[in-house]
Image (cartoon, rainbow, N blue to C red; front, side, top):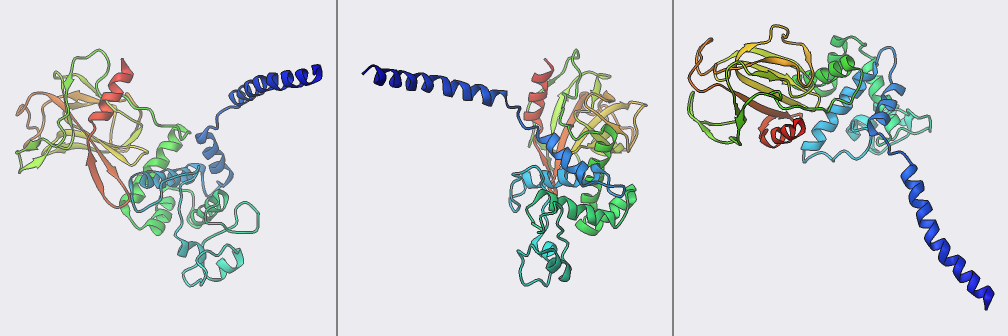
Length: 327
């Protein structure tokens, strides 16, 4: 009886201790850093002709479009590059799921064995990156070589420019972790705004308002909201003095109705969150230099490129989030 009691007591004690021990063990395991994992893959499959940031830019672009397209699978792994099966196995290959490297090569497919397991798997990270690296190696490491390789693969100028922009950002900052954002008006300045997306506009023909108006006084600083490259800068009949910045998430940020540009920026420059772009004004709605047709404000718009088309979306939710972050 006493032995039975001891066994029962021991079992009850273990039922308490074991889960506690397992929970501590799980808590002590560091979370996997997906960015670090991705960077490891890029570095492994880069070489003198294919810098890591070229592979990273293509992968980020593919991730961007898969997140917003309904005809593509959502990204579910560390790498988002997808090769069409007929490109991978060969257009005339009777087996579109072929994983035998020699057979794939015979039929002119692009698929390669990147991890040394003897097969060329369309869904394997190493095989995917090795195959993309081999394609890029045919052209060279210079920016124009990279663009030529992208054009041959995607055959869309806007896609080429978007990926080149991402690569430029990764090269400049030497990291893929570029997700920080800030509100376009710095802390300490008075401003007001509300959701004006979709409101009607009449000047220049009936249209909808594609953005959010942030009202502030003349001369209030306007800053970049994200990491990006200045794609366009100058006069626009509707937006007046405006700056357009493209980021690493296929998003184009539009800052319009400025009074002045900051003298330290120009087209092609790399910017980061908080980079001074200019000051609030009331320019626009006419020929170059037109100003004063409406109260001073910043028009902030955002446009997403999905690999086929570019479309405007409402920036108001993001602005509210960035505003909360700066408080």
